[in-house]
Image (cartoon, rainbow, N blue to C red):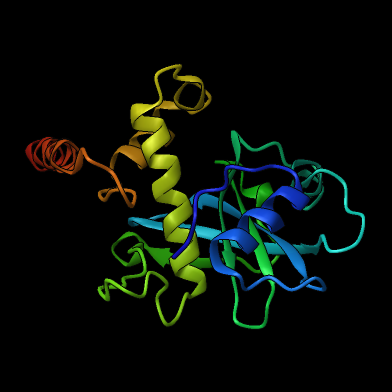
Length: 202
């Protein structure tokens, strides 16, 4: 299961992961991955991925994430969205950078349709982690995380950092975070947005 990132310092993350799973070795590797995402055409997103090794005496992960941005890129949002343990013993911290600026993308970006932004599923009540976590699963989780903040964060700072077009992009994302108790509210919001969209279509 992809976990929301609550601890900033790497030592604290390792300790937390070890306490929860018992899987982290003393020589475990820590990696930071950064997804840079842009709204694409025809209900798609365009994204690139970069990574850095945080295992040995790394600076604050926020600083590392900013250092992975393409030169000259100033994203509207840079946010830590999850951490996960991989079967080779690596602990991965995931950040998302959202921008409408095409200069923020890597040289060979990938595209993904909105309808493929689905979270990984695990229906075994005794096995919380899915058998496989793909790149698109991590990306989907991060986008849904940002969508939740755009919609429901009370201080509105993340929503206010976006243009009207970018806010509409996130309002078009339907789905909920794991553990949410307001599922009905979220689907009602999505249905309302879809009805409005259909009503304004030519």
